[in-house]
View 1 (cartoon, helix red, strand yellow):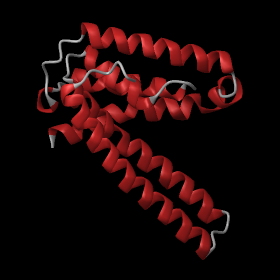
View 2 (cartoon, one colour):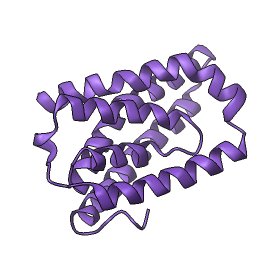
View 3 (cartoon, one colour):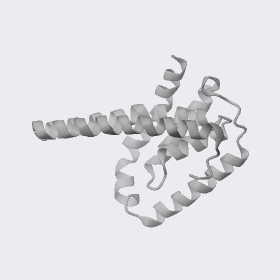
Length: 169
């Protein structure tokens, strides 16, 4: 219950930033290759720093409200093109002293409300536009396939991060 509360609270900064910054990001940043290149390189360097400096002692049950909010605010940075949502939240978790697997697990749990909200918003738009049965079946099949494949690869990544560092990323 505590983790669920922290996930809900940590989702708020990203949701607010998404609503407030959507137009600016779409109009000025989305297609700017300089922004994308810069953020990809900077996040990679910051991840290396987090890997080297992070204490990696805290597990998922040791996350504080402050830890979860720092990770939640970092998630808002993923609105900037070139910033990986999972990369930036895992990096923030490492800086907050989380073990790699705990940082990744919290990151993936944190993605659930954001992804669910985005899917619901898109589905609502499609329904309003006059969804036909063939389209509905294709969309549901795509969502289910993504969920199954995503679950499988998240499990692999969590297993990998229990004994390996993040330098490959």
